[in-house]
Image 1 (cartoon, rainbow, N blue to C red):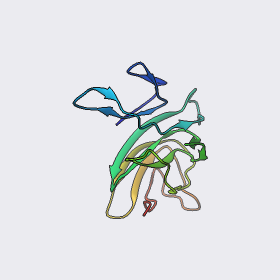
Image 2 (cartoon, rainbow, N blue to C red):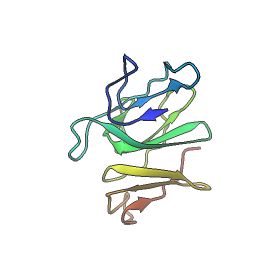
Image 3 (spheres, helix red, strand yellow):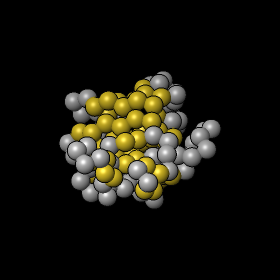
Image 4 (tube, rainbow, N blue to C red):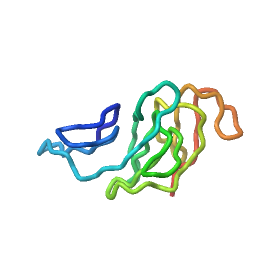
Length: 128
C-alpha cells in the first residue's frame, strides 16, 4: 500500500492511496478514494496508514472517503477497498496511527476528540 499526496501513480490515476504488487511492481485494481482538503492542504492527502485484521486504517488531510463523510480518519477493507463503518470524529489532520489491543491510536495537531480532550492523541475503538 502507498499513501501520500498524489493523483497518479505508475501512469494510472489514484488519489492519495494505491496498492502496488511488490513482486510484479504493478498497480493493483484496489482503489479506495479520499477527497476534500482540510486546513491548508490544497488537495487531500493520506499521511499515515496501518493494517490490522483485514482493515486498512488511514489518517491524513481529507473530508470524505469513498464518497462518505470521514474527517481525517477512515478504514477500508483491504481485500475489496470498501469503506468500513468505522467513523471516529476528529477536529484536525491526523499524522500518525498505531494499533493497540483494541483501540487505534492517532496523533496529530488536534486538541479534542468528539467531546473528550486528549490533546494531540486519541484512541477510538476500531471497527469490528
